Length: 168
Picture 1 (cartoon, helix red, strand yellow):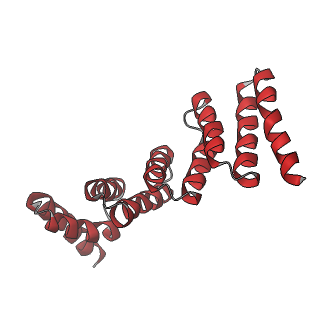
Picture 2 (tube, rainbow, N blue to C red):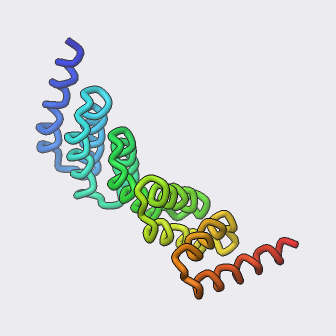
Picture 3 (spheres, rainbow, N blue to C red):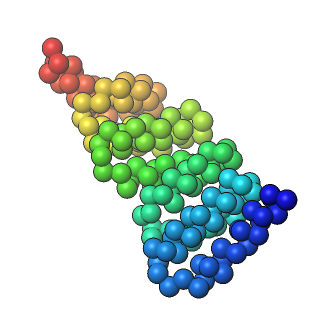
């Protein structure tokens, strides 16, 4: 009975969206539809389609991107989760929050997906944002050593020594 009502609600949203001319109102309706589809009906692919419709209207809608992140986490779609987190990092301007997302991207790249080059690029981005981020330098030094990237290793080691000496 409840499931039928949720299905009915999900079925009525497209008409409401089509009847709506205000784009912010459409975004709101698409987000509500996505929540019903994902949370109540477990129709994650349909929910993603609704969220992608939001991004067609507003490519930088953080609510939609975070919703995609949640769905990809729920469905263990790690490749898309990584792409979505990377997009979140691009659109986040608060340094500590951005670094936190980039650390998640590096971890997902290196430890879940085995994408070493991509993981390295996320760690490098953290250091680009905060050149005192020793916690990004340490794994990056190991990765540079493993890849025999001697020039990058030396440059980063010098940067780390400057940080450590500044703290002494």
